[in-house]
Image 1 (cartoon, rainbow, N blue to C red):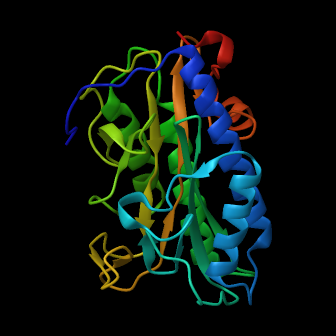
Image 2: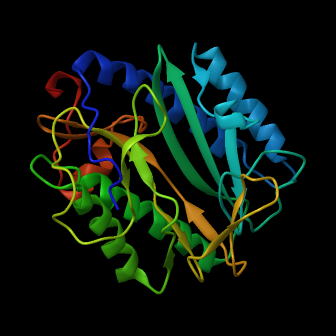
Amino acid sequence: MFQDRKLHLKKPAEIALMREAGLVVGRTLEALRAAVAPGVTTADLDALAEERIRASGAVPSFKGYLGYPASICASVNDEVVHGIPGSRTLREGELISIDCGAIVEGWHGDAAITVHVGEVDPVLAELARVCEEAMWRGLAAVRLGGRLSDVSAAVESYVRSQGDYGIVEDYVGHGIGTEMHQPPNVPNLGKPGKGPKLQPGLAIAVEPMITLGSQQTDVLDDEWTVVTRDGGASAHVEHTVALTANGPWVLTALDGGAAKFAELGVAMGGPATVS
């Protein structure tokens, strides 16, 4: 499950650069959230993202990555992840997952949001809510002395407590740093107490993907877009988090995770506490 257990621990100055990249991603995603509306195309969103990222002095992580042609992934309805932006026009009642990455001085930030297009069915709204809350439960489990699977177990436990949702197994969170994807993998389900020990300087992306039906997926002919096999709707969210000496610091959240961690009773780390 945890392919290559070696952890790439970061120094304080490196975490600081990842925070800069994370803030670019966080601000870009907020602009994209505001821009989502019926009639907007996914290409429109991609152009906005690239403009915002480059105007911030950063470089889009995704564009050119393994040949990927765009600056964001825009995945609508049954598209789970890696949807390629294009001429598709958003319609009232849809869900769109927007995944975005940026590089600052060689260091990456990576995050994703699921957004309602206008008014959506309450079932879809709840799907998106459960996915986001599960992510935060996973982020809150990034604690000193814990194990990597504690994060996985926290995500799964919350999703299971909320209903009969599918948890996608074939696509997972990941380590992050000078590369967008580093060891270790961070699955979204599993038992606690397993895998590498969580240490200061660890940076990972926590990213649950859940569905209204089966968790089984297929890849379309474009060789990128992942869809649910049964056509059920999906949601996908993500944040990059670093573990500091005093707790987790969410590098792609504009407030570092302070508000949500306070709600969950978790002490937030920060730049002065990275060890």
